Image 1 (cartoon, helix red, strand yellow):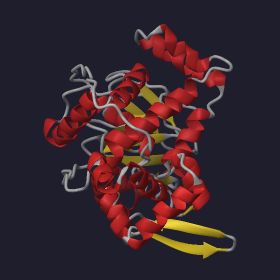
Image 2: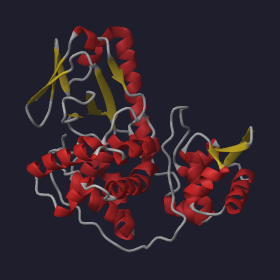
Image 3: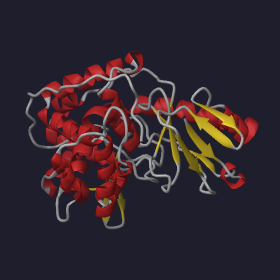
Image 4: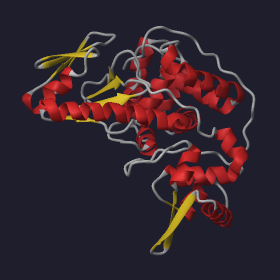
Length: 360
Protein backbone atom coordinates (compact mmCIF):
# COMPACT_ATOMS: atom_id res chain seq x y z
CA UNK A 1 0.00 0.00 0.00
CA UNK A 2 1.08 3.58 -0.74
CA UNK A 3 0.07 6.01 1.98
CA UNK A 4 0.03 9.63 0.81
CA UNK A 5 0.06 12.03 3.77
CA UNK A 6 -1.65 15.40 3.26
CA UNK A 7 -1.33 18.66 5.17
CA UNK A 8 -4.11 21.29 5.02
CA UNK A 9 -2.08 23.15 2.40
CA UNK A 10 -1.81 19.99 0.27
CA UNK A 11 -5.59 19.65 0.26
CA UNK A 12 -5.75 23.11 -1.33
CA UNK A 13 -3.15 22.17 -3.93
CA UNK A 14 -4.54 19.09 -5.69
CA UNK A 15 -4.36 19.33 -9.47
CA UNK A 16 -5.71 17.11 -12.24
CA UNK A 17 -3.85 16.90 -15.55
CA UNK A 18 -6.34 17.98 -18.21
CA UNK A 19 -4.77 15.97 -21.04
CA UNK A 20 -2.96 12.61 -21.24
CA UNK A 21 0.77 12.87 -20.57
CA UNK A 22 2.61 11.44 -23.63
CA UNK A 23 5.57 10.00 -21.69
CA UNK A 24 3.46 8.43 -18.95
CA UNK A 25 1.26 6.86 -21.65
CA UNK A 26 4.35 5.64 -23.46
CA UNK A 27 5.96 4.12 -20.35
CA UNK A 28 2.74 2.43 -19.24
CA UNK A 29 2.11 1.11 -22.75
CA UNK A 30 5.53 -0.59 -22.79
CA UNK A 31 4.47 -2.36 -19.58
CA UNK A 32 1.18 -3.40 -21.16
CA UNK A 33 2.94 -4.71 -24.26
CA UNK A 34 5.04 -7.06 -22.12
CA UNK A 35 2.04 -8.56 -20.31
CA UNK A 36 -1.29 -10.22 -21.00
CA UNK A 37 -3.10 -7.77 -18.72
CA UNK A 38 -6.46 -6.34 -19.74
CA UNK A 39 -7.22 -8.44 -22.83
CA UNK A 40 -10.51 -6.63 -23.39
CA UNK A 41 -9.02 -3.18 -22.81
CA UNK A 42 -5.77 -3.60 -24.73
CA UNK A 43 -6.29 -6.62 -27.01
CA UNK A 44 -6.94 -4.58 -30.16
CA UNK A 45 -3.99 -2.31 -29.47
CA UNK A 46 -1.64 -5.23 -28.75
CA UNK A 47 -2.65 -6.97 -31.95
CA UNK A 48 -1.88 -3.84 -33.94
CA UNK A 49 1.40 -3.35 -32.07
CA UNK A 50 2.58 -6.95 -32.61
CA UNK A 51 1.83 -6.65 -36.31
CA UNK A 52 3.86 -3.44 -36.54
CA UNK A 53 6.73 -5.02 -34.62
CA UNK A 54 6.77 -8.04 -36.93
CA UNK A 55 7.18 -5.92 -40.04
CA UNK A 56 9.26 -3.01 -38.76
CA UNK A 57 12.72 -3.80 -37.32
CA UNK A 58 13.31 -0.12 -36.46
CA UNK A 59 10.36 -0.05 -34.07
CA UNK A 60 11.33 -3.51 -32.83
CA UNK A 61 14.84 -2.34 -31.90
CA UNK A 62 13.41 0.73 -30.18
CA UNK A 63 11.14 -1.45 -28.05
CA UNK A 64 14.04 -3.73 -27.13
CA UNK A 65 16.03 -0.74 -25.86
CA UNK A 66 13.07 0.59 -23.89
CA UNK A 67 12.42 -2.79 -22.29
CA UNK A 68 15.90 -2.64 -20.72
CA UNK A 69 14.69 0.32 -18.64
CA UNK A 70 10.96 -0.40 -18.42
CA UNK A 71 10.33 -3.85 -16.97
CA UNK A 72 6.87 -5.33 -16.80
CA UNK A 73 7.15 -5.35 -13.01
CA UNK A 74 9.17 -3.39 -10.48
CA UNK A 75 11.21 -0.22 -10.48
CA UNK A 76 11.26 2.15 -13.48
CA UNK A 77 13.70 5.11 -13.52
CA UNK A 78 11.94 8.37 -12.68
CA UNK A 79 13.90 10.42 -15.23
CA UNK A 80 11.82 8.80 -17.98
CA UNK A 81 8.74 10.75 -16.82
CA UNK A 82 9.82 14.36 -16.13
CA UNK A 83 7.29 16.79 -14.63
CA UNK A 84 5.40 19.68 -16.19
CA UNK A 85 5.57 18.57 -19.82
CA UNK A 86 1.82 18.91 -20.28
CA UNK A 87 0.84 17.42 -23.62
CA UNK A 88 4.14 18.19 -25.36
CA UNK A 89 6.00 14.95 -26.08
CA UNK A 90 9.06 16.74 -27.42
CA UNK A 91 9.38 19.03 -24.40
CA UNK A 92 9.42 15.88 -22.29
CA UNK A 93 12.02 14.25 -24.52
CA UNK A 94 14.20 17.34 -24.22
CA UNK A 95 14.04 16.99 -20.44
CA UNK A 96 14.94 13.31 -20.63
CA UNK A 97 17.86 14.09 -22.92
CA UNK A 98 19.07 16.78 -20.48
CA UNK A 99 18.94 14.60 -17.36
CA UNK A 100 22.09 15.20 -15.27
CA UNK A 101 24.56 12.33 -15.52
CA UNK A 102 24.63 11.84 -11.75
CA UNK A 103 20.90 11.28 -11.65
CA UNK A 104 21.00 8.84 -14.57
CA UNK A 105 23.73 6.81 -12.85
CA UNK A 106 21.87 6.84 -9.54
CA UNK A 107 18.59 5.65 -11.01
CA UNK A 108 20.22 3.04 -13.23
CA UNK A 109 21.95 1.72 -10.12
CA UNK A 110 18.56 1.37 -8.44
CA UNK A 111 17.29 -0.43 -11.53
CA UNK A 112 20.26 -2.81 -11.48
CA UNK A 113 19.61 -3.56 -7.80
CA UNK A 114 16.04 -4.57 -8.58
CA UNK A 115 16.68 -6.70 -11.66
CA UNK A 116 19.43 -7.96 -13.94
CA UNK A 117 20.25 -5.42 -16.65
CA UNK A 118 22.71 -5.73 -19.57
CA UNK A 119 26.11 -4.12 -19.07
CA UNK A 120 25.51 -1.81 -22.01
CA UNK A 121 22.77 -0.04 -20.07
CA UNK A 122 25.43 1.70 -17.98
CA UNK A 123 26.56 3.60 -21.10
CA UNK A 124 23.57 5.89 -20.68
CA UNK A 125 25.33 7.60 -17.80
CA UNK A 126 28.86 7.82 -19.19
CA UNK A 127 30.36 11.24 -19.98
CA UNK A 128 30.29 12.03 -23.67
CA UNK A 129 28.19 8.99 -24.52
CA UNK A 130 25.21 9.38 -26.83
CA UNK A 131 23.14 6.98 -24.76
CA UNK A 132 20.44 9.48 -23.84
CA UNK A 133 20.19 10.61 -27.46
CA UNK A 134 19.71 6.97 -28.49
CA UNK A 135 17.15 6.55 -25.74
CA UNK A 136 15.09 9.59 -26.75
CA UNK A 137 15.31 8.43 -30.36
CA UNK A 138 13.83 5.09 -29.32
CA UNK A 139 11.12 6.85 -27.31
CA UNK A 140 10.23 8.98 -30.34
CA UNK A 141 10.13 6.01 -32.72
CA UNK A 142 8.04 3.90 -30.35
CA UNK A 143 5.56 6.71 -29.64
CA UNK A 144 5.16 7.53 -33.31
CA UNK A 145 4.47 3.91 -34.25
CA UNK A 146 2.54 2.44 -31.33
CA UNK A 147 0.99 5.27 -29.29
CA UNK A 148 0.32 8.25 -31.56
CA UNK A 149 -1.99 6.41 -34.01
CA UNK A 150 -4.33 5.77 -31.06
CA UNK A 151 -4.06 9.22 -29.49
CA UNK A 152 -7.62 10.27 -30.27
CA UNK A 153 -9.00 7.30 -28.31
CA UNK A 154 -6.54 7.89 -25.48
CA UNK A 155 -7.51 11.54 -25.23
CA UNK A 156 -11.23 10.76 -25.36
CA UNK A 157 -10.93 8.37 -22.41
CA UNK A 158 -8.89 10.88 -20.39
CA UNK A 159 -11.26 13.74 -21.29
CA UNK A 160 -14.20 11.70 -20.02
CA UNK A 161 -12.43 11.00 -16.74
CA UNK A 162 -11.34 14.61 -16.22
CA UNK A 163 -14.85 15.88 -16.89
CA UNK A 164 -16.34 13.49 -14.38
CA UNK A 165 -13.83 14.36 -11.66
CA UNK A 166 -14.17 18.08 -12.31
CA UNK A 167 -17.91 17.81 -11.74
CA UNK A 168 -17.26 15.84 -8.54
CA UNK A 169 -14.90 18.54 -7.31
CA UNK A 170 -17.35 21.34 -8.10
CA UNK A 171 -20.25 19.57 -6.42
CA UNK A 172 -18.51 18.04 -3.39
CA UNK A 173 -15.10 19.63 -2.96
CA UNK A 174 -11.71 18.03 -2.34
CA UNK A 175 -13.01 15.29 -0.07
CA UNK A 176 -15.48 14.14 -2.73
CA UNK A 177 -12.69 14.17 -5.31
CA UNK A 178 -10.48 11.96 -3.14
CA UNK A 179 -13.38 9.71 -2.17
CA UNK A 180 -14.08 9.33 -5.88
CA UNK A 181 -10.77 7.53 -6.40
CA UNK A 182 -12.28 4.33 -4.95
CA UNK A 183 -11.64 1.44 -5.42
CA UNK A 184 -8.12 2.43 -6.50
CA UNK A 185 -7.58 4.44 -3.32
CA UNK A 186 -9.35 5.13 -0.02
CA UNK A 187 -9.44 8.56 1.63
CA UNK A 188 -8.81 8.16 5.37
CA UNK A 189 -8.16 11.79 6.32
CA UNK A 190 -5.44 13.01 6.27
CA UNK A 191 -4.05 9.98 4.39
CA UNK A 192 -4.89 8.68 0.93
CA UNK A 193 -4.37 4.91 1.02
CA UNK A 194 -3.55 3.70 -2.50
CA UNK A 195 -3.58 0.14 -3.80
CA UNK A 196 0.11 -0.36 -4.59
CA UNK A 197 2.50 -3.29 -5.16
CA UNK A 198 4.91 -2.26 -2.36
CA UNK A 199 4.48 -0.74 1.10
CA UNK A 200 5.62 2.89 1.33
CA UNK A 201 4.74 6.33 2.69
CA UNK A 202 4.79 9.60 0.78
CA UNK A 203 4.64 12.84 2.78
CA UNK A 204 3.53 15.73 0.56
CA UNK A 205 4.74 18.38 3.03
CA UNK A 206 2.93 21.24 1.32
CA UNK A 207 3.93 20.36 -2.24
CA UNK A 208 0.43 19.27 -3.24
CA UNK A 209 -0.40 16.36 -5.53
CA UNK A 210 -0.78 16.11 -9.28
CA UNK A 211 -3.34 13.52 -10.40
CA UNK A 212 -2.53 12.15 -13.85
CA UNK A 213 -5.29 10.13 -15.56
CA UNK A 214 -3.86 7.54 -17.93
CA UNK A 215 -5.23 5.20 -20.56
CA UNK A 216 -2.39 2.67 -20.45
CA UNK A 217 -2.09 2.62 -16.67
CA UNK A 218 -3.90 -0.55 -15.62
CA UNK A 219 -5.15 -2.24 -12.49
CA UNK A 220 -3.72 0.12 -9.88
CA UNK A 221 -2.13 3.58 -9.70
CA UNK A 222 1.58 4.26 -9.97
CA UNK A 223 3.82 7.05 -8.67
CA UNK A 224 7.40 8.27 -8.80
CA UNK A 225 9.84 6.28 -6.70
CA UNK A 226 11.84 9.28 -5.47
CA UNK A 227 9.85 10.97 -2.67
CA UNK A 228 11.77 14.23 -3.19
CA UNK A 229 10.40 14.78 -6.71
CA UNK A 230 7.17 16.67 -7.35
CA UNK A 231 4.47 14.23 -6.21
CA UNK A 232 2.26 12.66 -8.87
CA UNK A 233 -0.26 9.86 -8.78
CA UNK A 234 -0.98 8.23 -12.14
CA UNK A 235 -4.23 6.27 -12.17
CA UNK A 236 -6.11 4.24 -14.80
CA UNK A 237 -9.19 5.63 -16.51
CA UNK A 238 -12.19 3.78 -17.92
CA UNK A 239 -11.28 2.62 -21.39
CA UNK A 240 -12.95 3.73 -24.60
CA UNK A 241 -12.43 1.15 -27.38
CA UNK A 242 -10.20 2.37 -30.18
CA UNK A 243 -12.37 2.72 -33.27
CA UNK A 244 -9.56 1.79 -35.66
CA UNK A 245 -11.20 3.94 -38.32
CA UNK A 246 -8.30 6.32 -38.88
CA UNK A 247 -5.77 5.99 -41.66
CA UNK A 248 -2.76 3.93 -40.60
CA UNK A 249 0.73 5.32 -41.07
CA UNK A 250 1.42 2.93 -43.95
CA UNK A 251 -1.95 3.83 -45.51
CA UNK A 252 -1.18 7.52 -45.15
CA UNK A 253 2.14 7.03 -46.92
CA UNK A 254 0.46 5.16 -49.78
CA UNK A 255 -2.17 7.90 -50.04
CA UNK A 256 0.11 10.95 -49.95
CA UNK A 257 3.61 9.63 -50.58
CA UNK A 258 6.23 9.38 -47.82
CA UNK A 259 7.63 12.91 -48.06
CA UNK A 260 4.24 14.61 -48.25
CA UNK A 261 2.93 12.48 -45.37
CA UNK A 262 6.00 13.43 -43.32
CA UNK A 263 5.42 17.12 -44.07
CA UNK A 264 1.77 16.92 -43.01
CA UNK A 265 2.72 15.08 -39.81
CA UNK A 266 5.40 17.63 -38.97
CA UNK A 267 3.04 20.56 -39.55
CA UNK A 268 0.55 18.88 -37.19
CA UNK A 269 3.29 18.23 -34.64
CA UNK A 270 2.96 21.77 -33.21
CA UNK A 271 0.24 24.37 -33.36
CA UNK A 272 2.17 26.26 -36.07
CA UNK A 273 5.38 25.57 -38.01
CA UNK A 274 7.46 27.69 -40.34
CA UNK A 275 8.56 26.33 -43.70
CA UNK A 276 12.18 26.23 -42.53
CA UNK A 277 11.28 24.29 -39.38
CA UNK A 278 9.40 21.70 -41.40
CA UNK A 279 12.25 21.38 -43.90
CA UNK A 280 14.80 20.87 -41.15
CA UNK A 281 12.67 18.32 -39.29
CA UNK A 282 11.76 16.26 -42.34
CA UNK A 283 15.23 16.50 -43.88
CA UNK A 284 14.39 17.77 -47.36
CA UNK A 285 15.15 21.00 -49.18
CA UNK A 286 13.25 24.23 -48.57
CA UNK A 287 11.86 24.43 -52.15
CA UNK A 288 10.62 20.82 -51.89
CA UNK A 289 8.85 21.53 -48.59
CA UNK A 290 7.28 24.69 -50.01
CA UNK A 291 5.92 22.68 -52.94
CA UNK A 292 4.59 19.87 -50.71
CA UNK A 293 2.92 22.35 -48.35
CA UNK A 294 1.29 24.03 -51.36
CA UNK A 295 -0.15 20.69 -52.49
CA UNK A 296 -1.43 19.94 -48.98
CA UNK A 297 -2.92 23.44 -48.73
CA UNK A 298 -4.73 23.00 -52.07
CA UNK A 299 -6.12 19.72 -50.73
CA UNK A 300 -7.50 21.38 -47.61
CA UNK A 301 -5.11 19.58 -45.24
CA UNK A 302 -2.90 22.56 -44.31
CA UNK A 303 -3.65 26.24 -43.67
CA UNK A 304 -1.01 28.97 -43.98
CA UNK A 305 -0.87 32.56 -42.75
CA UNK A 306 1.79 35.26 -42.76
CA UNK A 307 3.17 36.55 -39.45
CA UNK A 308 5.71 39.28 -40.13
CA UNK A 309 8.51 37.84 -42.24
CA UNK A 310 7.42 34.25 -41.59
CA UNK A 311 4.69 32.09 -43.10
CA UNK A 312 3.18 29.83 -40.42
CA UNK A 313 1.53 26.53 -41.31
CA UNK A 314 -0.94 24.46 -39.32
CA UNK A 315 -2.94 21.32 -40.00
CA UNK A 316 -6.63 21.78 -40.69
CA UNK A 317 -9.26 19.67 -38.90
CA UNK A 318 -9.39 17.50 -42.05
CA UNK A 319 -5.61 17.04 -41.95
CA UNK A 320 -5.71 16.13 -38.27
CA UNK A 321 -8.48 13.61 -38.83
CA UNK A 322 -6.47 12.05 -41.65
CA UNK A 323 -3.55 11.65 -39.25
CA UNK A 324 -5.85 10.16 -36.62
CA UNK A 325 -4.99 12.95 -34.19
CA UNK A 326 -8.44 14.55 -33.90
CA UNK A 327 -9.06 18.21 -33.11
CA UNK A 328 -6.48 19.43 -30.57
CA UNK A 329 -7.08 21.80 -27.71
CA UNK A 330 -4.91 24.95 -27.72
CA UNK A 331 -2.45 23.32 -25.32
CA UNK A 332 -2.02 20.20 -27.46
CA UNK A 333 1.18 19.66 -29.36
CA UNK A 334 2.18 15.97 -29.55
CA UNK A 335 1.96 14.69 -33.07
CA UNK A 336 3.09 12.09 -35.54
CA UNK A 337 6.61 12.41 -36.89
CA UNK A 338 7.14 10.30 -40.01
CA UNK A 339 10.59 9.68 -41.42
CA UNK A 340 11.07 10.60 -45.05
CA UNK A 341 13.46 7.69 -45.63
CA UNK A 342 12.62 4.10 -46.57
CA UNK A 343 11.74 1.50 -43.94
CA UNK A 344 12.52 -2.18 -43.99
CA UNK A 345 9.45 -4.39 -43.74
CA UNK A 346 10.83 -7.40 -41.87
CA UNK A 347 11.51 -8.21 -38.21
CA UNK A 348 9.70 -9.73 -35.24
CA UNK A 349 9.37 -9.03 -31.54
CA UNK A 350 9.49 -11.48 -28.67
CA UNK A 351 6.93 -10.37 -26.10
CA UNK A 352 7.11 -12.15 -22.74
CA UNK A 353 4.06 -12.55 -20.55
CA UNK A 354 3.44 -11.44 -16.97
CA UNK A 355 0.45 -11.01 -14.71
CA UNK A 356 1.76 -8.30 -12.38
CA UNK A 357 1.57 -4.55 -13.02
CA UNK A 358 4.62 -2.36 -13.32
CA UNK A 359 5.36 0.21 -10.64
CA UNK A 360 7.82 2.99 -9.98
